[in-house]
Image (cartoon, rainbow, N blue to C red; front, side):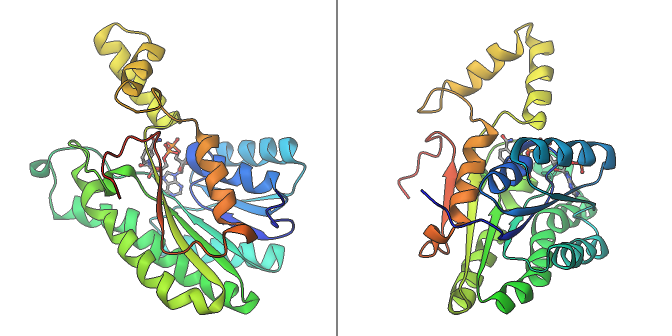
Length: 263
Ligand code: NAP
């Protein structure tokens, strides 16, 4: 299937590793021109070189922190200036810290909201004028399965990420007439650095191997395993494509069936 992504310009944030990197790689493999960002410059440059080598495309790497409004504006404008357009935005950022409700003060709550919600607000606000100019656009927010099924130790994530879905539905209604779709992808447990670190910590506590820990995490999942980043990247590329023009305002899990709700 030709996804019609050749020469489309995409910005994927928080993308030197994990799910962001997988989205950037999938888009680049389909012929899109891709900008990536992260805070650690050395990791970012290495990833840009690796994706470039694998896909044969030019990757723009911009060091930027998604909690800083000035970094977000600089990132969006640099991407549009470098490639001459901006058609696709994949919003992603690190997750808020885990913990119980009584662990967090107001400052922690506000930081979580800045990270999860305001990064998406600021990115979309800066990117949509470029999409409107092209009369074509795709916004995809990476959130979490915790939006549909809150996870016990992640109260900050459980409470702040749903706001991104409210925003996406509102914008899907507003921007459809401009040829812009807005969707969310909700990952389940996926083998990224973040989850590998968690797996290593559990392995240390339990005396199991990391693969055994991942095996245990995959047992309650209907497909019987945790996910691979490329499985989410493939959906991001499809939602970014010409073929997905009639999918908007949707929230799609990539979780092996882990969310038990019917809809
Ligand atoms: P990861 O493997 O730890 O990768 C995170 C990436 O984001 C890195 O490139 C990191 O680079 C970058 N990053 C983190 N904070 C940033 C910031 N403030 N500004 C710019 N870049 C930033 O994480 P992941 O597993 O891919 O997770 C991505 C998102 O999906 C997170 O919000 C996570 O909570 C969510 N999620 C993940 C899973 C899962 O199982 N993996 C499940 C549900 C939801 P730097 O550190 O250099 O900035």
